[in-house]
Image 1 (cartoon, rainbow, N blue to C red):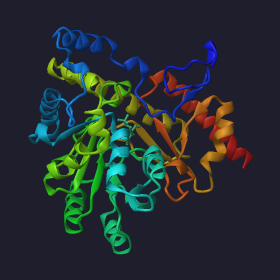
Image 2 (image 1 turned 180 degrees about the vertical axis):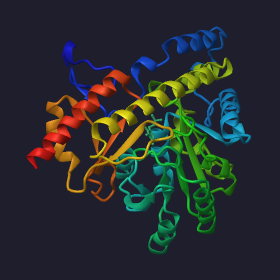
Image 3 (image 1 turned 90 degrees about the vertical axis):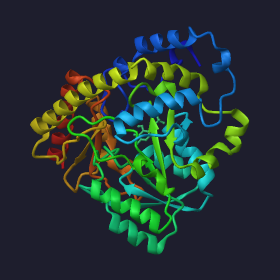
Image 4 (image 1 turned 180 degrees about the horizontal axis):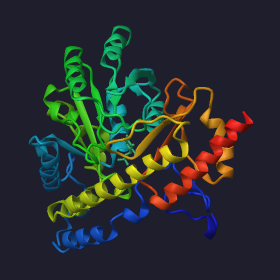
Length: 385
Ligand SMILES: Cc1ncc(COP(=O)(O)O)c(C=O)c1O
C-alpha cells in the first residue's frame, strides 16, 4: 500500500468517468451534520452501556424508536419485539443463508435480481433458480409451478422498487404470494430496502405487514435512507423466526449487531432528524428520477425501452435484442461512462440486452452528460454493427 493507493470508501471511479452503474446514495447527500447532532445528543447522555456487548436482538430503545418510525410509514403498528437489528441488509441476508440453508439447497429469486445478493447466495453454495417477472412483479403462477419441481429453502424477492427493474409487486400479487407461502410453508425473504423511497404514490403495503403468517422475513436498511457506512438495518419477522437468529452462534458470541451505531441512529429517529432527511431524499431523488427519465427519452428515445420508476434508485433499460451490453463496456469506458450490464442480474446468464442505470449517485448535470455519452456509445455501436 502506498499513500496514493490508500482507500477509504468502496468506490474507486477513474477521474472523469461518470459511472451510472453505481447504485449508492450521492456522497454529497450523506448526512454528516445530522450524524454529528445525533452523536452529540447520544454521547451527551454519559451512558457507557452503548460500548458494551449489545442485547442479541438489538438495543430495546433503538427498536422502540425504529418501530415508531416504521409504524408511520407502514400504516400498521410495528411491534418492537418483531424487530431484529442487523449490520445492513447484506449482513442480514448472509445470516439468513447461514441459518436457513445448507450448501446445495435450492433457492428461488426473481429474474432479474439484485446481482450482489446472487453473490451472497453463491458464497453459500446455493442452487439459484430464477422466476419470471412482468410489469406487476414476480409471476406468482410461475412460482406455484416451480414449487411442483423444487423444494426451495426460501424465495428471495425485492417487492418494492426492485433492483434492477424498479418494478413494484402489485397489491393483488402480494396477497397471492402470501397465501402461497402459507399453503406451501414457503419461507419468503423480502428485501424491502427501497420501500421507504416512493416519489409518486405510496406503494402497496410491505410484506413486513404479513409477518404474522410466520413465513416472512422482511429486511430493511438505513443504507438507502441515511448512510451505508453506518452498517445498520433490521429484520422484521415473527418470534419463531427471530429466535433462530438470536440463538445463532454469531449473536451469542458477539452480542447484538452494530450496538454503538444503533444508539446514534436512535437519537436521529427520536429527534425527528431521520424523518426530515427522508423527506429531503425523496424530493431530490424524485427530481433526479424525472430528469434521468427525460434525458433518456430525449437522447435514446427510439433506441431503448423502459418504464419510468416510481421509487428506488434505478432505471432498467432494454436495448435492441441483438445488442450484448457487456460487449459495449470497453467502448463505454473510452467515452468515460459506466453502467451495469443486465447479465449480472440474471441467474441464468440471460438479459444480455439490458442495462441498469442509477439516478441516486449523481446530480442532474452529470446525469445529462452521462446520457449523452451513453447515446454516443450506442450510436457508434449501431453504425459499426
Ligand atoms: C436490493 C438491495 N438489497 C440490499 C442492498 C444492500 O443493503 P445494505 O447496505 O443494507 O447491506 C442493496 C444495495 O444496493 C440493494 O439494492
